[in-house]
Image: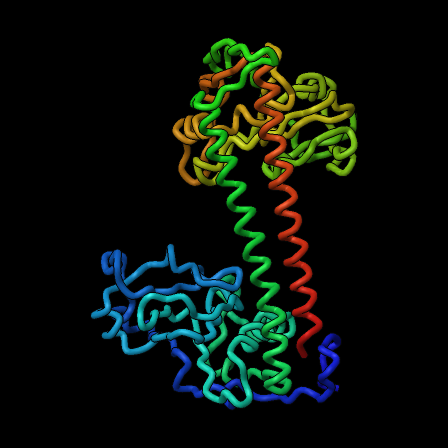
Length: 425
């Protein structure tokens, strides 16, 4: 039966199947620009500040077009291209490189936008059978995405030709049911948009707050209203020691078995404790390695390498002595020689000032690294322990709000994905 698993109770008829070309005139589908005619492709020097948006496949994500960051070309050049014109209410679908991202053209300030050959636009011409919002939702569904995956060719550069797109089957209910589905899912999309906006605003707020704390624009007072002592500027080498590791993922005879904390555990900022390490790989190490690479409460693990300089220095604080665990040679351990609040340790090396220093000190070509010497030279500012606790308490409360907003966002995205799987055939 050509019926979805989940539908509104007032509808019961089977859905009808159509080829895309039956619903949308092929003349309205943007054809790829011939690779032999490079003059049709704008070059970097052609981009202007105030022109016609030139939308690429990577400008379409999460069901929307990032018009604020896409390139623009002059209207004169856009007119000369003679193809790839897209207007309000067109449904876009990426079909080369990135396959299956979709959006609807809206909120544009120009008469039209231009598309690269990586993007097809669909303009609904048979309005008695097809609602353009429903078409976009159908494109998002797992039903349709699986069809695209089957047709995709090209290995690392997936591609679906225009001819294949025209032959794809679209299953449609009555126009009334299409509009009901579209309205319901659009309301959910709006909720997800607002949740994502809240999440992004919290991240921006935290970043700004940390910068103000780092610049001493915001200071705390003790319980009696007195100023805390001035912050002290030191290098990481002044307040602690760095230790590298030589432990890899191998298991060798005559060595002791041990849990291994790896690069990605720190990069993902996981909560590393005696419970979580039980899920980590078990490797072997010499007794001398286990002794020198142990992990104690207050230690900070850093990622000392990355593919880009600005991605170095992710860190995780060890909140308790770890039993039977060491860290891999992809990480670097910092062990403070002075008392630093555990909660504050999560933040003082994640300020923009510290991260900027790390970026400048990174060396390399295809992969960038920072040496122990460079790490030790990083300058940090430390408040007294009491002010550390108050700063950490404030930032933890914001982190909790960020985590809650992220959870709500992900739950609603999962809910939408479940609906897209069950409301279409």
